Image (cartoon, rainbow, N blue to C red; front, side):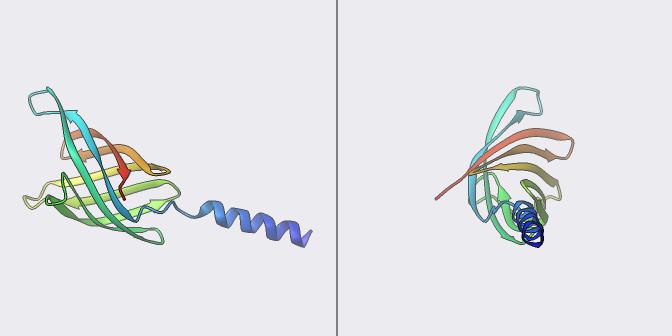
Length: 120
């Protein structure tokens, strides 16, 4: 009985560990331009994870990066907040699936889809 309980506790602990998102992720942001036409832009996330805290930068390219003001991960769900130099708030809600993350980006009133893959 004690061995069975220890196994259950160990499995619960292992399954509760968040995904590891440390590294560079690149992909696309797909949404609508201000005039309503379809628009696709680049997305680059450079992340560092320690336990359930995510830090680093996000932006449209490696040279267009904005510091993460708060970032968390719970299981495979990542939430990131950042602010652009002109004060616009960026919010990302992503789901990790192996070497890919997908979800939404909110920039002010606008919402777009994000899809990134871990780069080497």
